[in-house]
Image 1 (cartoon, rainbow, N blue to C red):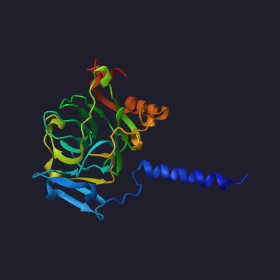
Image 2 (image 1 turned 180 degrees about the vertical axis):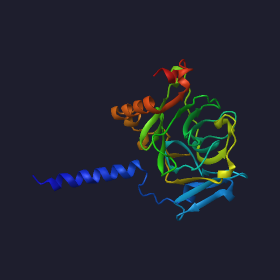
Image 3 (image 1 turned 30 degrees about the horizontal axis):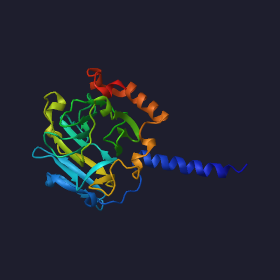
Image 4 (image 1 turned 90 degrees about the horizontal axis):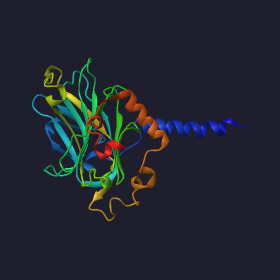
Length: 279
C-alpha cells in the first residue's frame, strides 16, 4: 500500500483544521472596507496595512469601531486578543446592535476583565425589543490574552449560536411560535473597550496598569447586508441552509462539555419558564 497517498490528504486536513480553529486563515480584507472608527479615535491604531486594529482604554477614554452597514443574518466572526495585566472592570466587546433606542435588538460577546485571582469571564447576552436579562457566563479554557482566538455569531431565522474557536458555547433558539422572543432587526457590527464597575462589583479599574489594549483582526463580513436584493432568511445565503438550523451531534456534545466544565451562570436557572429555556 502507498501510505504517502493516505498521509498527504490527512496532513492537509489537519493543517486546514488547525488554521481554521486558530483564526489564522488568510484574511486580506482591510479594516476600512467594512468598518469605521466610532469613538475614541485617539485610542485606535490601524496596523499591518489595515489588517489589524488595536483598541485602547486609558484614564481618559475608551474606544470602538462599527460596521458601515447593517445586516439581517449571517456568520459574524472577529479574531481577538484581549488586554493583559490587571483588567478589573475593563470590558472588551464584540457585538451586534440595531439602532440604540427603546426597541433595540442586541447580541453580545462581552469579556469581563479580572486578575490572577479572578480570570476573564466571557459574558453573553441577548436583547430583543430592548429587553435583556438573558445573561450567561463562562470561564474560557485558555488564556485569551496570550494569542488571538475566534469569536463567532451564527444568526439565521432558526437559531443564534455563539462559538469560540469554532466550538459552540451557547445556543438561543427562535421560539417565537411558542411566545418567545428572537432578534429580528437589522444590526451593525461593533467592537469596543471601556470601563464598567458593574462587571467588577464596584471595584474600579487599576489605572496603574493602563493603557489596556485589545487587538482585532479578520474584517471580512459574511452576512446579508440590508437592504438586500434577497430576503435575509433566503436559502441563497449559506448560513441559512438547513444544516445550520441545528447543531450536529458532535457540536451538541462539545456544547454540553463546555456547559458542564466552564459555565458560571445562566439566566435560565432562574427563568426556566421562558420558552427558550425549555429546550
